[in-house]
Image 1: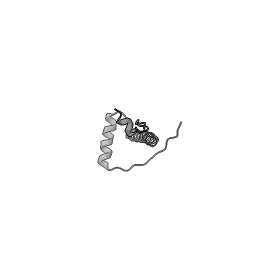
Image 2: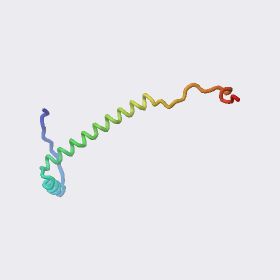
Image 3: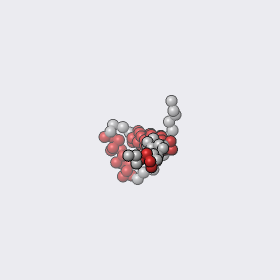
Image 4: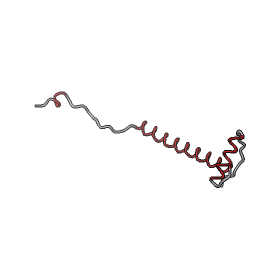
Length: 79
């Protein structure tokens, strides 16, 4: 289990008032609302970074696009 730590955030009074109303409509506290939003953003960023690294690894590896040795001129123009 991870230990929880406090964090101080400064907001203007109007934003705090609106946050209290929003939290009340969701049946939670402002603290929990802020914490869950930050947790979601961090998780989303972690997923993005993982997907980015996977995509870059695939690009570095390359994709099989077919091809192979070129046919000679004579092979192309056989009659």
